[in-house]
Image 1 (cartoon, rainbow, N blue to C red):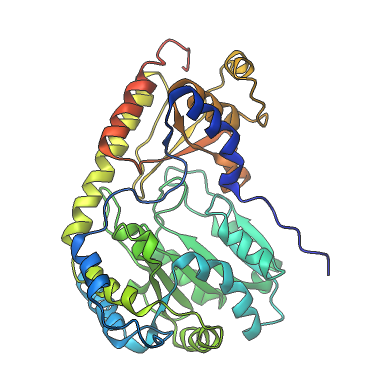
Image 2 (image 1 turned 120 degrees about the horizontal axis):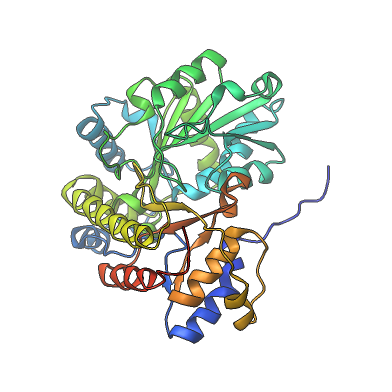
Length: 393
């Protein structure tokens, strides 16, 4: 077995660009990382502060009160009636994504492949790497909705697959998958399919969908309150689905001491019991998406509004960037993604993410997260619009 090599954390690679933009503008409008900027609802903070559950160890699986709130949310929001015993809490969904392949390999040590989207949240691949497994990216069909091309998966990889990830709405490009197709694929091929649904509440012009609406066999659904309730700092999420996998993971995670703090679970109950704050946030994100899409369109860059999520994923224009980069004495990677990222930061103070952060299919694109205040989004829009005449078309 070869020595583990730790790759750089993607967003740390933006630091040099960020520092130069900060020196030039006095501030950076950071649209690179998808961390919520809007306030956590007051009633959620009140529940956190008033909780009486700080003295003892909380159940790793989640309190009955929290799991009941999750069960009620599934029924109310998605018309899914799931047994409370098939629901479990997680300490933020990122740790679950990163650790899941390692734990599942204890169930199926002969499996050595993790399947998932080729254009994706990088932790899917990193989790496979941590477990010593091979990550096989499934390319998009390159049709209008960029859905994962399940028919393209090599038969050998299907036999070796420990699990498959699907993310809908997806990070980074916001496309929405047909989760019925993935449920049927999971059961036809007896492959655990884990549907990361952390952006499910933010869809535009389509209905919210969970894979659990189609059944629970061979599937898990993963949800986060980080995006839904602007509660990323609380670190609370949950998974639900196939009985055998849920019960196995509950026991493993209990032994590992993975537990959401008691007061945080109380806050989670409050957040899940209310939908109105989510509706407000959904409209807020959509308006911000439209503002920035209009700004880029005004300078000749084609932008398609996503069906879900809170990111724009746009193709970097092929123009001459060298004079701006050389004037700042900034050296960046040679791709258009990196050049455009640096160019935007140096000319507008707006920081975005190069598409390569999300796999090779992201080369030539940038991701823009609308996670700043309306005032800063408006300022970013104004500065971007002033770039007109740079021959982006």
